[in-house]
Length: 192
Image 1 (cartoon, rainbow, N blue to C red):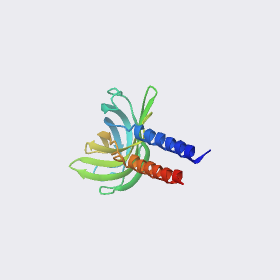
Image 2 (cartoon, one colour):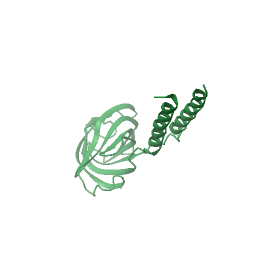
Image 3 (spheres, rainbow, N blue to C red):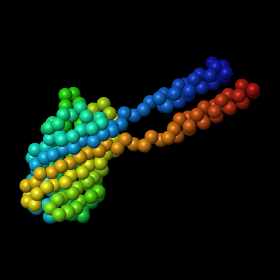
Image 4 (cartoon, rainbow, N blue to C red):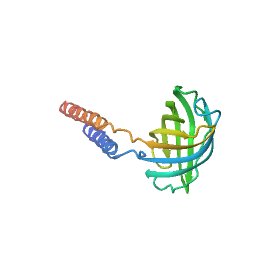
């Protein structure tokens, strides 16, 4: 293959790659889902360090969670979260899961960011990753607050999927720079 045709082929391949990168968009989750349920703390809310979830169902669903009907049953994983003030890594995979038809929704907790006892409520918050069949894994935030002064409590919980901020075109700009460099090399190579 002569050098002129080789450069044209290389430029076409790189241009196709640039267009493909620019047009491919990740399908991140955007939305919020809320739950209500009954659980059993290992002690009263002021000193509890773990919870066993008994019955959990959805109350609200927005955005990409909207197909989930009110009252859909969900499964939460029982877990230990430590005494009030205990924060940091606390992997629960999955923390919760729910299936509607062919679509599965779930959330993996990575860390606890808030663990407080306020009044008669135990408040927990954390970060992790939200998943929906057919979507890309998406950073998310989870919260739970209990109601009741005994070990047997009701609770509300919410998960919000936070669509990541796009890279602002940096990848496409770098690829464009590479194409300009190749075009310059082509001119130099073809002159010789």
